[in-house]
Image (tube, rainbow, N blue to C red; front, side, top):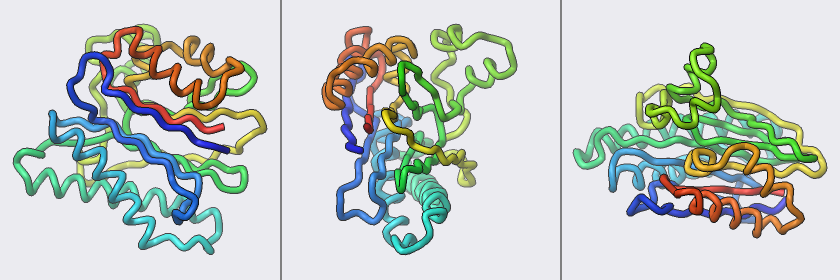
Length: 243
């Protein structure tokens, strides 16, 4: 599988608090992709998202041996998220300008047709195949909690005035619960990681329409970002597309 990443500040924000990462062939974890959506103001959001990715990779470099059994990949990724969380918390505590900063963190690693993933916040992992779009992750957000309780619909959640309130993020608090999963990659799968700047602008149907075209992976990634900007670009937009 190849991976293409794109990120944009959108059409409203002056800076980009998102950060993305795609591993290189000589990295310890192959086919590792990460999206992080920072929060905490002009400086804090950018620092939180980029620092979380750096800390995660630092932990992997020191604590994961490629000779280990594949099952240990997920354990290492969870450890990396927890280490990154402690780093972000410490930075916010030590620097008044960064106080209260945080970030979502969603990562996948593909190995032997298995996709191992970790997730905190409201960034998302989707799988698209044969015209069907499946969301693998659950949004850690106020509105999704309301949807789960049956108080509002998913469509209402997309336009709810409190849709940007997330209930779980790196940096708040120091002890973080990490969602995990293992997905068997099928022939024809397209895997999409994105921040809410994409799915906040595009419906699942609109995402599916773009992913279902005959265009290249690169073109599809470009079109996803372009469409989100066309529809308003109210937030930073980041996507990683694997296929």
